[in-house]
Length: 219
Image 1 (tube, rainbow, N blue to C red):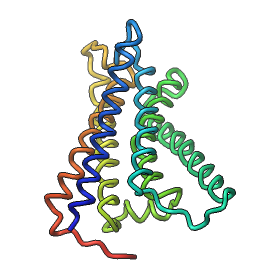
Image 2 (image 1 turned 135 degrees about the horizontal axis):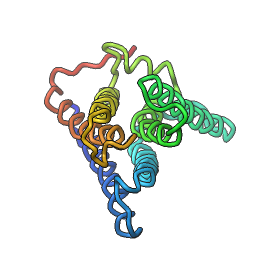
Image 3 (image 1 turned 120 degrees about the vertical axis):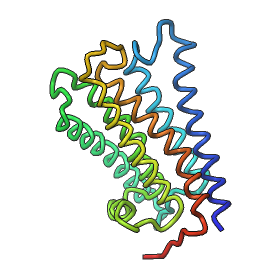
Image 4 (image 1 turned 180 degrees about the horizontal axis):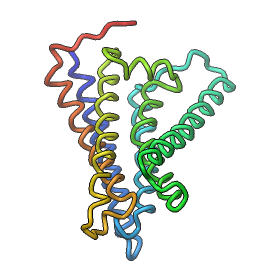
């Protein structure tokens, strides 16, 4: 019943995962001395930009983005402005949460905010692409039994995997191992990226395996 949506989901996720790969490999080829550890902020923004651009393009081409009720230029600009505002507010939200969990408040503010940008690109951006700037729809999707489509379920899985990955990535930081990937926020951003890529694989696989049990009701 959901085979078409699952194939489209798997294809879009493969393209997004490829963009992560290219955003990691191309700077290493073009920029001397580039490395994920040594040039971490550059890698972080490279990946964030690639995921953002490719996700917006892919979801728009697939027609996943919710249609606008009005077709006036003013309404579309207002919708774009609200989406950008939500993206920025999400960066501030993740920055605040990470600081509350123990990240340096002032000493590494740029690194912390960069991690927040990455988390926003991997989570909030997908919500904007699938649900639009509609906070009520976001609350519905992430409430219990709130999914109304396979894409809602996909959001739940990918966002959860990304956040859990970032959280797990913080565990090695205080350990006295003196490894280069323990420098803030390398392990958290790598954990978030690994969690995100895991979610890209797990979401269509889980939905395909449970497709006979999935029932969505209009609410």
